[in-house]
Length: 488
Image (cartoon, rainbow, N blue to C red; front, side):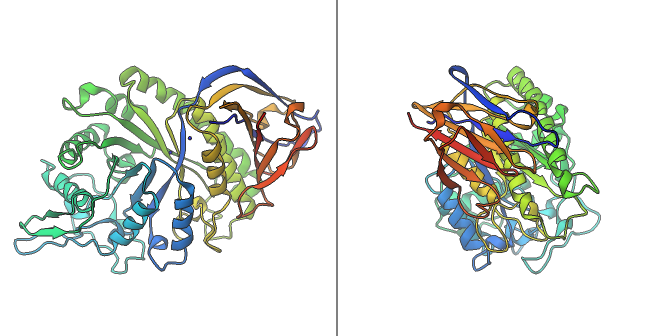
């Protein structure tokens, strides 16, 4: 989840010769004003632990990004890194233990200090669900425990057990500690601010909840958490899928208890490659799915505006996936530029849709833990193209920028997406190439002498390459993202 004029190009090349694409921008024809903030999510995992190979580079990149609305999610595959009470309390003892959770969480809070964050300890302790047998978890905190998630029915229907856990967890980080179930005070000395709290993660998938069940949990959680965070705002749903029934039910204030705020909703999209698809064809499937999602967002926005127009939207997991056949195989370097250009595509489309927060997923992934969504190269621990495109957009296209009438004159116009922005008299053009082929784009004459910032196969894991435009066209290498800046 910042004032300049910017244009975003998506360029695609095709196998048929055609006239050179030409950018047209009507700077005085303002289409809308952006309210969108680009940002990212940070998912807790072993590579963010202190002394882990990716720790230092990841938190350094996060700190340098200076983003708002960063989402932090300790997640169920690593129970010891996500759940502070792994065993139910007994008459004589509790199992509260933050020793493995604190270092990563504190490093995150320090790296984002001074910025708004959205906290989401998404994992409900498994013992709170009814199951036929106790569900175990790995002894080694670094080992994946996929079976720990799930469960569909809480053992305490009053939800006091559930809300008590989260109130204590939040108090640990904001109130200096808490009193546990046996009356013992657990001291932390932490007094962090938590401006946003997101209630659970992908409940439609992880717990197979209905919108009715989730809404009851949301209301109970918000009521309880407001006793310790009275000024906090809340994010609801965090859906894996865009089922219309969820939005129709959750966004209807009549389905909530009186006084329950609907500050913000969230949901996700991963544009994945198709099964048995070779990498050469990825560009078509991932961009088609990204386009389909943007169209779905327009529908959801109509529902939101009808039922709860004051509610904001955070689409806080946006990324791409390789197909199953590529999992476990080396990921082609060009994939990172493809994935980066998809995020730029999402950003343009979702900005036009009026989305408030546009979050890329995720800071750290690695083999065995969604390597295809990482923004840090797990081989050299440097930020990759996905990170640098986010930073390029975040530093240059801010909420309040004006979108102007922009187009591409070409036979293959669908392969090139362009969007102009103006802010404080500065004009910018952000270009991205949707296809795995180099293409030249003719630009307006007034851009001669403008600065260009390029992220492509040449920049690799380094920041955007800076240059000066000295011709009537610019070149986009495969899946390139380019920002043109005209300060006159």
